[in-house]
Length: 373
Image (cartoon, rainbow, N blue to C red):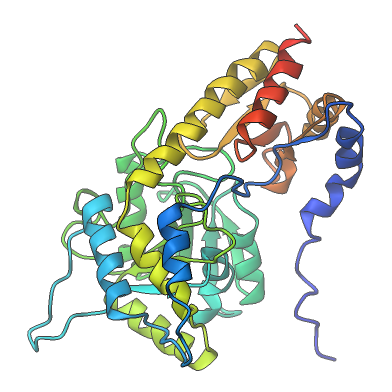
């Protein structure tokens, strides 16, 4: 009998927070939801204007995206990430620079399958990680190995790394990134780097694996995933892209053509505008910086220690107790956070606290915690 494809998938973790959510909702000042990294701030005006002007799309968009979008992604890679433009081939053709994604979660969940991995292949993922890396391996029926050290990683078909990390906010050092690149090339494996939080470094300067200081003059074996969800408050639009090895991108493009993974045309035009503008990103950085400076000391005053959290939109915190006890303690104050057991077996004493709530709600959370001291 055929095994259901969902048989090996974990339970959806957020369902287990129902009790804590109900308790937090009973607070007289209302719940402060710091559990999910969903942007709450406005979509930048230039993005909304671009969408309003992009209504004339009667035909199908291409999977590769418009020439304007290809140019915008290339300019972002070189201008913001320091990636060397691959230029043109000896025949005068330009290789594929990047492939648009309908939000990068679909890439994380389906990249192993789209690149042809299956039951005979091993996928390496971080020990503490966004759960969808494992889901992608399960959907492709791969063997999954948890490993954070390229010197200890087994031979495999593919590895995911994530810097800055969700949930921990840790930033991989250049030496660690170079180690993973060397591992990928030594094993002829695919190294996929989720770099969706790269724009939000606080105590460290995150670097892309496609930077020449990391990968040299070649993108062979390397892919990076980037998203506009966090940098541009565009989570509801579903806009991101994959860049890197032209050979892997060409393979990915063919699979996505046959599968119909087409980013809607109006979204492509929004991406062009927002990838080309950095002012709105700096404005959003300041919002998150202000919230971080309120939340961190308030949490520390009530006994939490912050680990990592050098970058990204989360504080990774512990009071040295089971994470569900910390969730319950904060729920008593009307604050909902994510337990560390969502993200791996070794993070059972941590909670992830998101800065993706309004200034007023973050201020309320900080005041409630400060009042306990």
